[in-house]
Length: 72
Image (cartoon, rainbow, N blue to C red; front, side):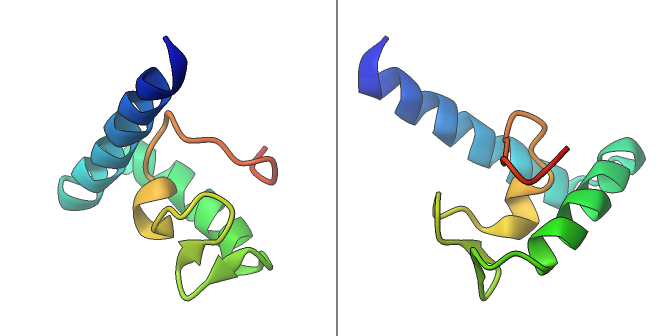
């Protein structure tokens, strides 16, 4: 699908994360809490934004379609 497909997937992932910020789900919040602990100690976290991908971490941690090589 090329780069445009990747942009669409990234956009959908961002929307998913922000939806889960606005409408919290207890199951997703457990996952987000674990991810946020890892991100909180990460050198790539600059003021709540991942410098590798540019995502706002409050939403990235809540997007189940997002990944990070530091998350298990």
